[in-house]
Amino acid sequence: MSIVLIGRTNVGKSTLFNRLIGRREALVYNTPGVTRDCHMGMLALSTTSVPLWDTAGLSLPKDTPLSQDLAKQTLFALQQTSLVLFVLDAREGILPADYSVAEWLRTHLEPHQSGYLVANKAEHLSQDIMTSLAGEALRLGFGEPLFVSAEHNIGMSSLHGLFQTYFCGSSPLPASPAAETPIRIAFIGRPNVGKSTLVNAILKEQRLLAGATPGLTRDAIVVSWRYKEQAFELVDTAGQRRQARVQDPLERLATSKTRHITRTADIVCLVLDATVPIEKQDFTLGRRAIDGGLPLIVVLNKCDKITDIKSISRAAQEAVTQGLSQEKGIPIVTISAQEGTNIQEIFSWSFKLHRRTQTILGTAVLNRWLQEATKKYAPPSHRGKHPHIKYITQTGRRPLSFLVFGTRTEAITTAYRRYLLNGFVKKFHLSGIPIRLTFRQTENPYGKLTSKGSPLL
Image (cartoon, rainbow, N blue to C red):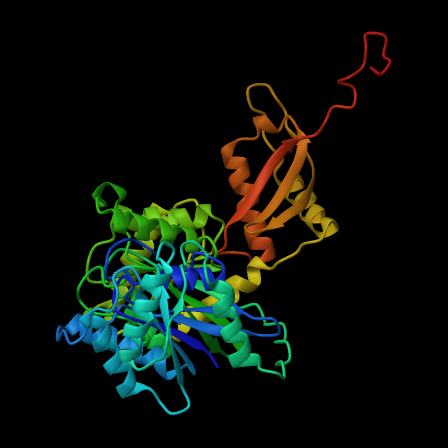
């Protein structure tokens, strides 16, 4: 049971998709052909939720490789669904491209699937124009259209009524059970490093557009998947170039969307091309993920084109150690997405890192470690000030955050802070994930005494 939005380019399918699922999931821009890969979101009804698919605009009968790939993507989404919404642009009327889409739909619709017309962008149409358009739309073979405006939230109640009747009917479906929380993995990197190919290799199907042409992926696509009884959400993102090189407004919008959705991930995989040198932009992307408190896995792709993988891996390890010098234990995985080799190691690390990010340490355990660490090596004095560390407590999990209290903490040297952090990571087996140790000055109980020794009231 699911719904798919199908239509020619620039009729507002993505805007309608975002309106129906209640959030800006799909990239929207006033340029034809922005959507390329299929989006899937959940549409909430009164007693259940159903998947909703947004698809690329069909450009038929264009016979270019890209248009053929887009049609395959749309056909994939169509085959998953039972209810089809054929979306038109009410302001432009019925165009020849709409008739081409209608013919394509009639060819591919199965007997169990139902199709309905939705005329979008109808916010300023008069009743006479809508009546005339409804009569013309009958020639498409999908009945009279429902007139809506996704941008202005007009006609959404009629659509929800259709969904309610179609999926729930007179006997409402039982409420969906509480879904398990998936581990969300975002695949980021520069253009053409093989992110989409990697996700396809994981899924073992051509779910996403992939090829040698840079920039095929324009939006961040979330795909659900299961591995070893664990639910995952795989996020394929648009390639990110250096900010100074990004001039196109659509590319800036896609980059902003990628950054936003990456912040919602649990783990970030920085995908690199093993056949080209590591650049500063790679470290910028990795640092951005770490600064956001996210565990990082470096994925060295296209290793099928490398003869000496050990040397390349060692060089990458050295580069990552220098480029992300403050982070210890970042795993590097060598794979070939094209050949499908060694991909399972990504998920072996994902399980480990995700488990570490869920760590909760009791105050007693933390303070026993702190006492041992400070007893072994007390904080040195700095400019005549002698810091004294008292206790530690956990304050958060994204990233793992801890507050260390003491007196004259501003005098604690960088080297000593690093000593504590390294000892902490080693003691509690937390390598490979961001950890924040923040030092705070404890309040001086004698700081508010008068000259006579009485507390200030």
